[in-house]
Amino acid sequence: METDATVLTADEAGAGPEESINSPFAEFRRKFKRQKTALTALCFIALLALIACIAELIIPYGPNEYNYSALLEPPTGAHWFGTDEFGRDIFSRILCGARISLGVGIFSVSLGAIFGTVLGLLSGYYGGLLDSAIMRVCDTLFAFPGIILAIAIVALMGPGLGNVIIAVALFGTPSFARLVRSSTLAIKNSVFVQAARSTGCRDLRILFKHILPSAVPNIIIQFSMNIGTSILTASSLSFLGMGAQAPTPEWGLMLSTGRNYMLTTWHTTFFPGLAIFFTVLSFNLLGDGLRDALDPKISNGE
Image 1 (tube, rainbow, N blue to C red):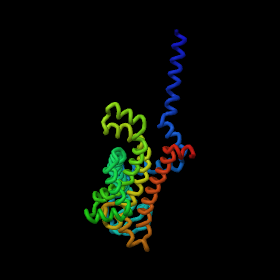
Image 2 (cartoon, rainbow, N blue to C red):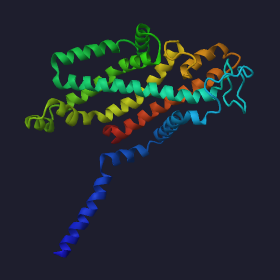
Image 3 (spheres, rainbow, N blue to C red):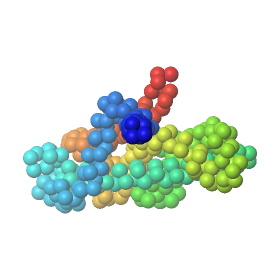
Image 4 (tube, rainbow, N blue to C red):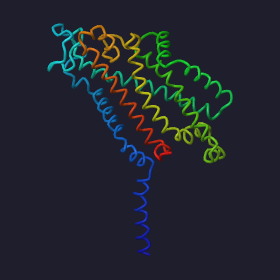
């Protein structure tokens, strides 16, 4: 009896590590570690997020600290990225602008993902007239280039970061709606969903507990890739004078004010543009890595 008990205990003990190794999260982590480019992008994004949180503690000058004795100075030991037309330190302003750009990108995409996910679930699950109405609205929004639609919305609502977030969230909603709708259509007639329905589960429980988890990997991929697009769109709107307003240290606005001096002082546009470039590139590379790690067809080489 003692031997049997000992063997059973060993079997149970051996099942735990094997189960943890084969768990979905462990499998994702193993595949994602192979994506060296995506890991590098993730490290850059994590560093940028840390800088955004503690920018006030590490910047050498205030973001709006004027110094009229150092106007349009090139990069030096005192000002690593040079100064702008008001003598403000560009390095400090870029670090502070990271919080604005990341905040606008993440918050706007989050709003778009929430609304798009709900609409996609309802459209795919109920079908019929509701599905047709939601998809026709999405088709209408898809007919406009994202930046043109954002410009139109901000033009109607007025300039400002709040309106930029609403505009970016609105044109990002259809992509999430279509993505979640396709996953819902593929799984709503599966055996476990029919079993849940036959046991008397309410529709909301079926939607958010049984159907939504199957769409989560695709939502994560779309979310990470949309952040880069949202940051670029928000910077473009600020560049056009429809987003952040002076003296906010926003990257697109810094590009807009620095373009008047770019022929004689290259640093006023080079460093803000470089910050936008690396940030958008990092989110796109992270999205590619997440897709390769989460998509079983790509992972298995199908």
